[in-house]
Amino acid sequence: MTVWDSLVGQRPVIKALADAANGQGMSQAFLFTGPPGSGRSNAAVAFAAALQCASTPPGCAECHSCSTVLAGSHADVSLVRTEKLSIGVDEVRDLVRRSALAPVGKRWQVMIVEDADRLTEAACNALLKSIEEPSDRTVWILCAPTVEDVLPTIRSRCRLVTLSTPSNHDVADFLVRSEGVSPPHASFAARASQGHIGRAKALVRDEDTRNRRREVVQWPVRLTSLGACLNAASNLHDLAKSEAESITAELDSREKVDLDATYGVVERGRRPREYSPALSALEKSQKTRAKRRILDVVDRGLMDLASVYRDAILLASGSQVDLVNEELRGDLARLNRVCTPESHLARVEAIFEAREQMLEFNVPAQLALESMMVALRLPEGSHPRNVSWQLLRWPPWS
Image 1 (cartoon, rainbow, N blue to C red):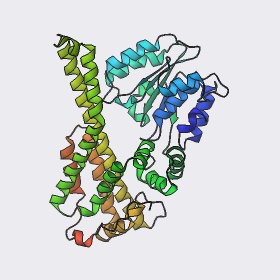
Image 2: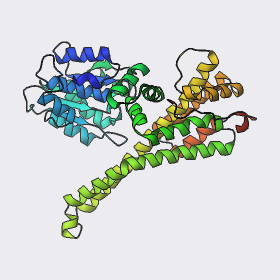
Image 3: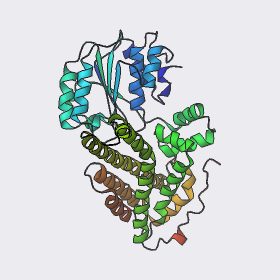
Image 4: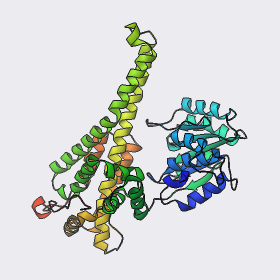
């Protein structure tokens, strides 16, 4: 077992990072890029563990240094991740101050920024000086989806490490080994997740996640009227809101309890003067986090929808490429009888346009989804009785 075992389908990356940890091609700033679910954060933590490991080769996953890094408790490894829409300048300034300190141990002070694409302009400016002139034993690791998501002044000073989307075979094999599921079950999750490791794990662990995805991929054949489109938009938004609330409710409650304990609200029986501003700041942070959670869940639903039209195009063209939604082959054929591949492509573009409106231009999710669903509407005459979805085989690995 090594620290690299969590990286699925990333053999060239593993070799490059292992060599760097061993002193070959080492740099004091790295930029890890790759599509969502490719394992950027896992790669950053694994690399940090290898940098702190004294074994040969580094990255044994068994020594004290490796264990504490992987557990998130190593004194010389700082990790910044955000549940909010952006990382502000105050967080980065605190990280920069810590980066200037000498490491407690004998090796490196490692600073990991998981969502470098969410750095504000002021945060980037605060970070730039430290990356340009780092301390001798400080290593910066930034993670972002693409190179273009990071300012040129920062990325030009980093060594680029590019992760790829793992193959279905690699993901399925990983799920069989790590989750103990059957190969057919793992194969379904690998296809449905489209190479997103976290999503694949959720699909094999949680029946509710599978059911939500099942409902989303059934919508394309049901969008035969304006009412059906508006209902689908409302349902997707409600599903996202419900899932986001289930994730954040417990965390919000725990944070409120911690805040009350910090200010002695329970013991004193009254609120000190400083409590009200702290509570307002906490509620604002929680609201921002909830908004991001909703957008993240909606985004997954949009990718599931796009995969249906992608499969329809592949089926119409006679391509031998594996379908993401193999269990929907019958419905895909029915879609192709009422729509052309060109119209499917236009629908994919409508999905990505809605995604851009929500994530980049802050358009309310409900409005963006309603506009998108109307654009996905099937031609007149494509009544549900002519497009049957009841033949869907479930569970798809049975």
